[in-house]
Image 1 (cartoon, one colour):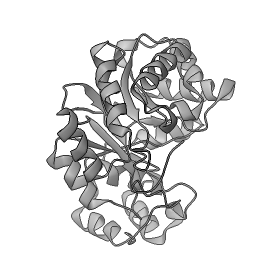
Image 2: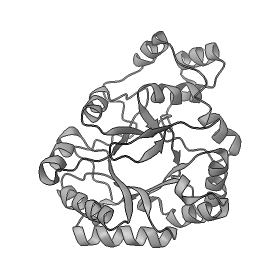
Image 3: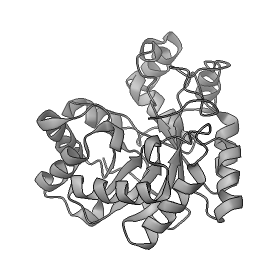
Length: 278
């Protein structure tokens, strides 16, 4: 099944589901990422801190897939938010992956205590001008962080990648993103290391639709206009995770899933207002 595409605010087309590469490293990582590309994932999400940009680039080359049809992303770590360091880090990311450009490059965390995320954002703007990246984005930015970017630079990100799953649906953040033309992308869409995939309510909905719980949750993301980033090492699960575009959840299903929300459902308590990413 072909993954549909959306158009970001800056005009870049982007698939409605992204393949996550966290902890996919070395030769085994190359095998899993190549498998994902062969399964039909055209967007792959990496980061400097994942230490797998080299494996990602190798998977792309081994796949034989046309580069222009792929959407490849990486992320700037918090320790390199100074302008000059950020530019060099983006160049190093390209060298490690042996790519001419990234389709997306993100600031991984705002690191508000450090207070340099505007400077880092200016570096991403410059990187786009230089042709290093096609679209610039952020992860884990709260409304106040996004508004500061707009006030200081006049440029908002194409995507804001945030923790998002049924235990933590982030309705206010999603609404803010949408209001400002920013696409929401979901990390940990399946609630990493939680009991989400064995939740009785989700199991009941999955049985009704003849789908797996993971497929129900990923479809839920899609119907919230969010782009989920599931990770799977095996081809069969990779195929299953993207097989979510031939059915729809009912309004009743969506309302039922909404009852799973928790006041603060962050799985590891990583609040962008205080969390400092390395």
